[in-house]
Length: 165
Image 1 (cartoon, rainbow, N blue to C red):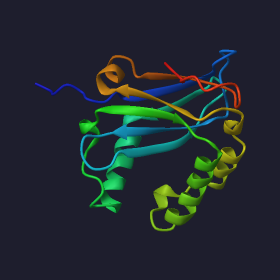
Image 2 (image 1 turned 180 degrees about the vertical axis):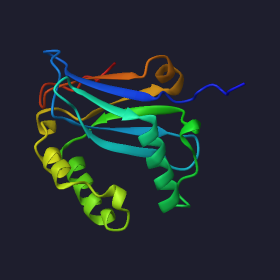
Image 3 (image 1 turned 120 degrees about the horizontal axis):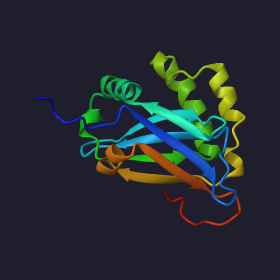
């Protein structure tokens, strides 16, 4: 008998403007895979499409986890099957700049972490500065039942109420 599948094949992150309920694009989002031991795994960046959606497949997440474990042997130990939750986040300007710098720093050592010129341009042209950064945490059981994470973002300066699902 097969063991129950732990992580969904596809996680969908949908971002809407909290006030207008309209999709937000292009917006930089990422996932943090929360695990019980050592460090959590950062996945992304991804850019939302015209529907305010970004997709993360379990295959790409598992590849990124294995890469982290290979490059940083002492810092990571868990697999995707160990995940206890996921945090979807909307990046702010300084975080986006750090993503670009990280790509430049580590991309020469780990080619998979080098962002393409096109992706860097998309990051720079995102509308993230128009919105407050935020995150939404989902426990793994809830993600299994519904692999869609909805984020409602406030326009920058519009208030600081939580993003909510």
